[in-house]
Length: 377
Image 1: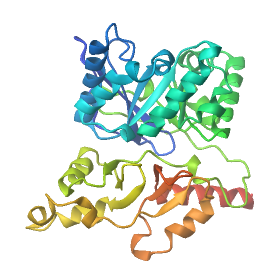
Image 2 (image 1 turned 120 degrees about the vertical axis):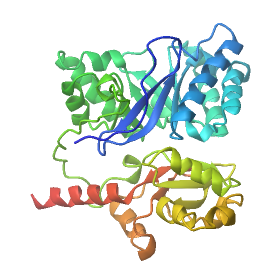
Image 3 (image 1 turned 180 degrees about the vertical axis):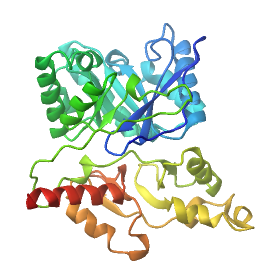
């Protein structure tokens, strides 16, 4: 099986930003993009050059799609506080991206005495709306207990660790252990540098759902072909199934003040987007736009004239929210409460009601079916 998204590969010449897809191994869909320049965009010689590099990467990604973007930030930059982070915020503002659309991956060692400063910086970035990731886990110089204090949305395994997995059983054991640890803290896990089928099979066996690398890179046609491994039999889980935070996907969000034209642009940028969530200034979901119903509003002769310049919230349905700890069976009950919206995406929220992502009902049905079958064997 395969899935594809139209992302043109980087030019062989020049310092064009490189946009690489992050793939959901369960569905074969591209759910986010990693954006980088020829050099490390987050470690500039000057703040001005850094802002330019980050902005170029963000602009390139925005031309491709409105999917979430992953950027790398050194721990030293976060520890440096607002002055060090100003170029990043400026680049984001200039590119038209909002913090909720960006996942910041923090990498690099730091002195033990600066741990509190790092955590304070991460809390500040999270308060602004960024999603936080911890990178290079497995061989990077980051203490493992940082996962408990930083509470990242995403954990990125070390590329060097993945590279040695097929020929080094001990590192495969390490990768599986680190992946299990990360998931146990509530984080998603991303495996980078996937080059061979054997690596793909290994990380899938660890329970890793997200991956990127040369094996999943655009081909000569500019399209991504994703080999989907045969799902392994799942272990017998809890009676009500896995929690929804283990199945959620990044949401495409717009400000609650966005116009219907803005929503049309979001849906038109990528066919795999099934919903757009309208959020307030605190990233709390206030409206849900289902792709089919919303685009149907514009299908008529006067659809654009009637709706285009007006707030998209006029055409939105109330978001169907589920807390991140909701079991799969309970989420199915929420999905089935309204027959006319039974296949609408569910919005997963955190402890304070902020949008963490979406849950597609098709994924939920598959998970529940797999869970039920484990009890009948």
